[in-house]
Length: 299
Image 1 (cartoon, one colour):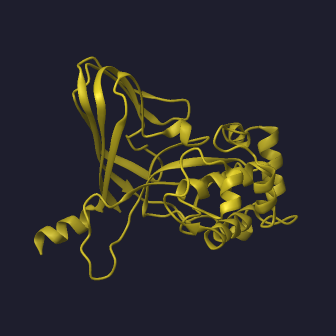
Image 2 (cartoon, helix red, strand yellow; image 1 turned 90 degrees about the vertical axis):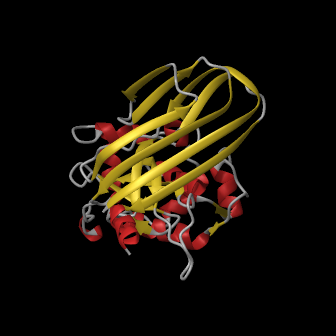
């Protein structure tokens, strides 16, 4: 599947910004199952200096410095990406979860890159209550992917998707108490629970394709930034991605921007400004298969 994505972020400031520096995670990753055909980032106002680098986690990061006074900052990221996720391994053929935890703890060959995702991070600490919730899916000797799939399904079943009741800083314990939230909350909960029982888990950031209700046209800007979980299966099978918001093992309707320990490592737009005051924020995302665009244009 080849997608075209357009992600626009617009800040309108209450007072003039004189200087600004921004860090962007808006260029998709090249991966064995994801090929970036093209990618570009444009801004208004135009940056006076720009650097494109790779961060500690291997994500593409763009640094911008703007020295022209401005009341509005708008950044538009556009890309074409080919996504071909491999089939996951057979769940019952994966290693027992205790063995995966022991291998991650030892940090030997094939495990050292996973080991850092065992530990607490600011937004995804290993909360004991989350560990107790996750542990119900991991009885002794259970194959790790079988446990992950069950935990993914339980979160989808036990928690209600409801926007506006949480924010970026809602702690995992509160999510457990409320039993409601959005994709970031469910991702944080699952990561916290897995880390609490010793399994490496990382925060995946990107996009998910959304579909209009039957009989209704697709709305521009209606697609979403999304979060899901990367879980380590051991040195041989490596990583699998699971989406607890939708109870799926991730396939070809997700596009990866990057990953980190939690959202703080992979925030799409972060900045430091001189001036600005209060601000308003508008975000629009369009993720469309190119084949569908061509069909619509021709029909």
